[in-house]
Amino acid sequence: MSRTTQRVQFPGHAENLLAGILELPSGEPKGLILFSHCFTCGKDLKAIVRISRSLADLGWGVLRYDFTGLGNSQGDFSTSNFTTNREDLRSAALFLGREYTLPAFLIGHSFGGAASLSMAMELPSVRGVIAVASPSDTHHLASLLEQMNPDIANRGEGFVTIGGRAHFVKQQMLNDFRSYDLRTAVELITKPILAFHSPTDETVDFRNALVNCGLESRTTAPFSGQRSLISLPDGNHLLTTNGEDCVLIAEITNAWCQRLVG
Image 1 (tube, rainbow, N blue to C red):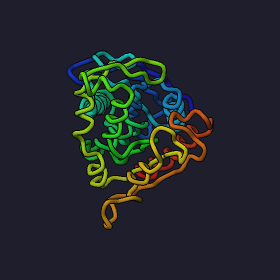
Image 2: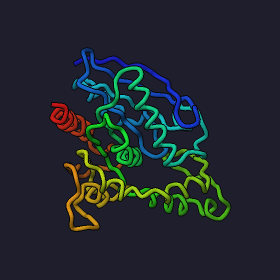
Image 3: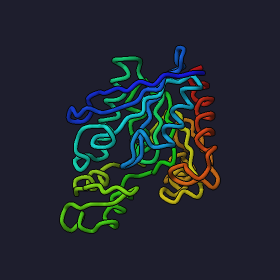
Image 4: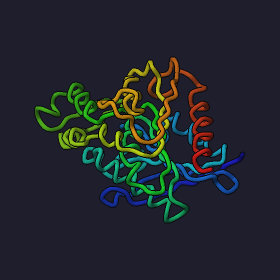
């Protein structure tokens, strides 16, 4: 199926204009999917582009966008945090509702997956969440950033280099990461979750997927909802070591979402 690509803008956190790309199939889409990227990445990460376009080829409309202060979006990254990510995600969903139709599914890679999971129960139109290499908490990232540059804890700010780029980080970001209880929020999700994760992920341990899918729970009671985990053998966090992983994610996501929309 052929597709079209549209560049869009919409107000996000603090009215900053966020940049997005909407991939649409040539015919009426089966539904719209909102794609959130990983920490300091962007909508143009190769894996996100491939998955989005593959889903559009399979008949879905997919909006991928840049969080505040990243990619082509306005704003100051150092003032962003998990709370603003959630606000940006909500703004993207409302934009789709105003201009097209509300998203039926959320998909997120890594920290974008965490944001998507956290918003699952707050967006009535969402029928399910696809979490790709996603963490089960937001606290670990705060600790990792402090390890990368102790000045953030000692002086309240500092630069960290991620993916070859320097990012200015303030203590407020870490405090916000530590204030959110993602694990409890995920336990309370009653909507279906589809997780993709590599057992050899070098950034977010595979155990996070087990937690998100209720396979490693703090209680003996099973989680609500339907949770499915697909392993990506020999894959890495950015989905670059196995060229078929993005195709696999798109094809399984297509079948899973189509089943849920009937």
